[in-house]
View 1 (cartoon, helix red, strand yellow):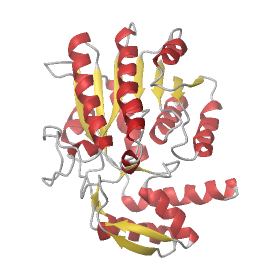
View 2: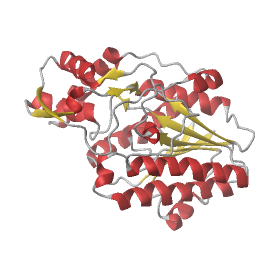
View 3: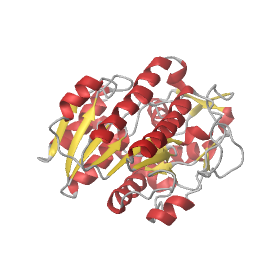
Length: 327
């Protein structure tokens, strides 16, 4: 079977593509390789994927509908995993147009690809736990209202869910949205807190700890995320009566305080952090905590990696990658 993955040079896209290729599946990959973070890291991920003969890659911007249509017009695939997006809550304060272009225009372009693809069985797409905004009634459930986002990033992701429901209703496209909860692990994104903390801790530099570390996050290890997506691809879509569209939380269901997370990271790096405590940053939220009842019931999703094990694997990868890169 052939799969189309957008954002394949990104963190989750890379791990998912690698898992599918190792199972003998064919992967058609798209990524625009933008410079939001280190392009060398994206290229290093791609080099691993390119070692598989059943891997195809196109450097395509999903917001460019003409280039997207041209690249995919002769490609055969029956399932889409749409992960390409402009990521990051804080960057949306600096460059809002990038989020509108990639997360809104790009998402509609991918829905149009799905709409016109004969024989499409399923399209999964990335949403985010950020859609829950500053809710304080934990854990977050899919049925909770999510119409008061506190960042533009969150607003674009919620908009993607609404637009997807409309497309599913109008055109009978089987769509599944995934609200990711703070995914971490080897080959992760350098803009994520745990990655930048590691950079600075090992360099002896000061780290900025927002809200004095009094934040709760549902840190979810990448292997658990990939296992969950693979089970969804294997079983197929589970639709609601109103439209073939459903949204799921996909998280660890074991939230940790940022303070505990930092202490565990310090232990795995065998180095104490030099900390600067700061107030909450605009657009950030105090807590994320996933209720995963829906995805567990429908797909048997059950994360297995605890925080210490996950950070140990990340720390080992980080040291190896940077020693190999000569950094």
